[in-house]
Image 1 (spheres, helix red, strand yellow):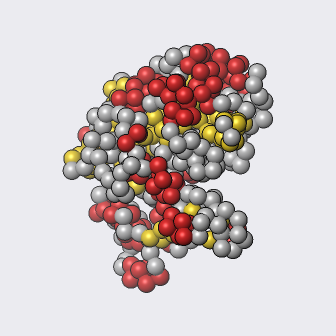
Image 2 (cartoon, rainbow, N blue to C red; image 1 turned 45 degrees about the vertical axis):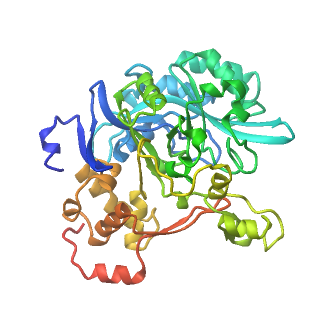
Image 3 (cartoon, rainbow, N blue to C red; image 1 turned 120 degrees about the horizontal axis):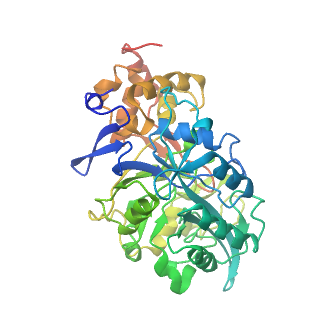
Length: 459
């Protein structure tokens, strides 16, 4: 615990964060106006390829250990999940919910979480527009259960919303937007992972070149897009047509370990209106920052063809006319290439007026790299838990805790890993065609050198 923590009531969490030359304060507690972190795009156990542990009880406590106050519920269109939402959650602040006490489990810190939930879902729309099949994923936010029920009723007439937590519907994105807004003008539609090649608004394989092309005259109601794991805000700043569009980041997590890998930090009222209003404002005083992957780590950062182990920068794709040299089929054009095609500003363009961001590697990955094991190894868990108990949350550890304080609790290699990650001193083999990028913080020589130092704390 830092010296700052001791000055605060036990229901608050404080952490200094240096961003853009100044310090901001992260305060999580029961106040109405506050600074907090949210992850608004996840999936439940009812979605395909999702862990069966993605249930409300586990999300409640894992979010607390991660450092997230507001979680999206995900999947509210699925009848069984919506039933669980209504049974296990109860109203908290306006438009937000909390887990009922009877369902709560204790966190790593042996406390009960104060996690809030906001009604969210991702819709997969597959439809013909013009001469092309479009595959666009959109996030939907709902301010209350009644609105969610109206949306569910309308969508159930269009397709089978019980088949998957992320329903696949033959529904034009513009029509989805009309349905959502007709249910409640406070509800919102935001393009999900906006650059993913196969399933997004700007996707190279099935998307559009502009929001207006996708949403028509109703594009005026689109106030934000989700950048996705393979792009960061700076890449999106290259498009002047996105200057008035807020850029949000969420984990799109299919497992508990990955929640919070991307997230949003706000300084606003703890409520649905407060969160949506902060995003709409695109004001760095209300929407403080986004927490990002290093975009190279995302599955579709570069172009390539996974089957043939072909991975290319845009120049190489252009040189080969987009055709794989292994199998002579078209490569999957990734996010870097697609951004460059639509951008009207050069690479490296910066806009200090925009909401800032920070790139992070998850703590289990950092520990795994330091110990030269996988992030799911028992040795990682053995180091992870004491850090959470000592400093409150993963995001606090990754962003805020002083290096000398970390050194009192964990191994030198882990401390060095966190320090290098904060400084961006790492190497990443970029992801492509559905393959995550590979992060390397240490090489074998690094580990040997650091291993010679004695750890100040052992388990």
